[in-house]
Image 1 (spheres, helix red, strand yellow):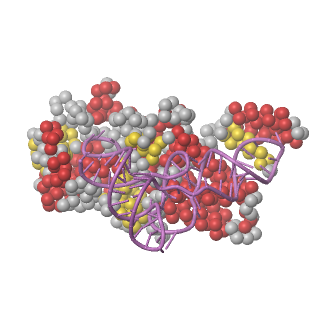
Image 2: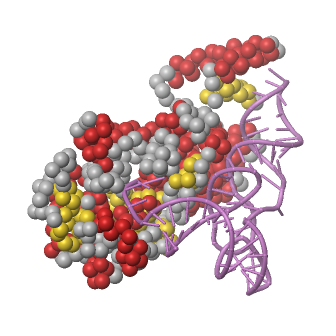
Image 3: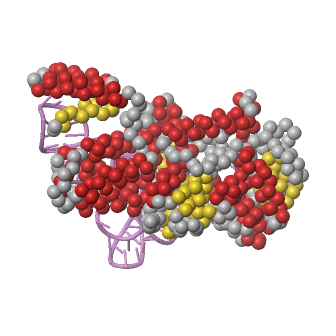
Amino acid sequence: MEIKDLYLQNSLTKQKEKFTPINEGYIGMYVCGPTVYSDVHLGNVRTFTSFDIMYRCLLYLGYKVRYVRNITDVGHLLDGGEDRISKGARLEKLEPMEVVQKYTNGFHKIMDIFHTKKPSIEPRATQHILEQIEMVQQILDNGYAYIKDGSVYFDTLKFNEEKKVYGNLSGRIIEDLLTETRDNLKKQDQKRHPSDFAIWMKADPDHLMKWNSPWGEGFPGWHLECSVMSTKYLGETFDIHGGGNDLKFPHHENEIAQNIGSCGCQPSNYWLHTNMLLMNGKKMSKSDGNTISPDELFTGDSPHVSKGYSPMAVKFFMLQSHYSSTLDLTDDALLASEKGYKRLMESLKTLGQLNHKSVGNSLDLEVNEALDEFMNHMCDDFNTPRAIASLFEVVTKINSFNEGHLDLAQISDETFARLKKEYPEFIDDVLGLKDENIGGGNSEALDGVMELVLDLRQEARANKDWGTADKIRDGLSKSKIVVKDVKDGTNWTFS
RNA sequence: GGUCGCGUGGCCGAGCGGUUAGGCAGAGGUCUGCAAAACCUCGUACGGCGGUUCAAAUCCGUUCGCGACCUCCA
């Protein structure tokens, strides 16, 4: 099968390039996952939702994708040199792995709520200590690292002199890095150069998470896990590497250095970086406290929002901007997105109710064009805002057909079949948006009740008993059910 | 301080040399018992100042404002 051309903005080359996979029809994609030391926040959600859309889109295009997203459960250092996971453990009097499990569960729950697909493999750093030790050894053997008092450091200066690539991704110049950090040398006493970084850290006796290694008891450096796990599951060079753009430096830069330093090859052909979610114009950040949790957003229990917003409304809000742009979270924007999302969902329901009988095809072209545009925009670096714009072209068509403003008979059977098939696929399979009002177990019973109630109201209306008709409508509205009289009957939806 | 990015109509947000982004809000209309919804029409926006060009929101220079990274962060 012929797969449609896809163009990606590659952070490594800073250019938009036509995507060519290493193995035709197959894609290896690695995304840096969360560090599980506290609850996820919305910024994490935006990033992983963005990559989920990419994953979905690649699958829809017909690729076989192995999507690897790690869980970082060790190795992340705090300012004081303390492991993040250990810190969490000490504070909550839990085993480190208990902390890891707790927040991993929480992360999974939120990703489910946002209707994202599970990655093909979700490896953890602590499950790959042996491989990490091996990679440290390889880097040492290749001469790009040195041992200092039980720790192993990556020798960025030597690496750069030989390979000339350090700083390519993040646009740093190694000489600048050397001078720029000269005044904090005190914290870097073991390093030869300020830009060097630890790939293996010696552990203090009271450190909770530590392993034996050829260099003594210790734990792996943060950047190492991604180098190791991407290599293990996707090969030394794979297709796509993603992550938040705050990981570009030092994390991804160091990751590249480690891969090249151990096997001599560039880990990924295409690097994609998602931009930050802002709130009040500032980066939403756990460490700064400028944050809102998914739950607070759902319940509205936050000074930043006037009410609660459903997960899909929030997701739709995120998809209305490009993944590589910053997105400022505001109450007004959320309000607007919520309505747009509902209109989109309504159109899906309306489409399902259309009865088609073709007598012509004069409207085929515009329907097909709008449908074509969706994937065209998705294949242009996953331009979800434009793709959604073309979806709204279709919304208008569907509603016009429904209202009789456009003649549904003027599209061919073939086009109608395409509309019925692809439009819901675009929304659900590609964008991962689902109708939140469907399901819930009691909908069958509710449907029956509603049918009866609306029948009664219809009788009242037929008798011009407006008082009763309006009473029913107002009463239902208190239960968040909106009644709409259309030309041949009455519809209802949740508000 | 160094590096990079951004400033678009009331709000959010695409576009990045010439053609309608889109959503929400607002105005008018159609429909309707009323309402809601839906559909149709409408705003002529691109921080300031210069420049390049037949043509600039889109390129160049400059200036102001904002943000990100340089330290853990998606």
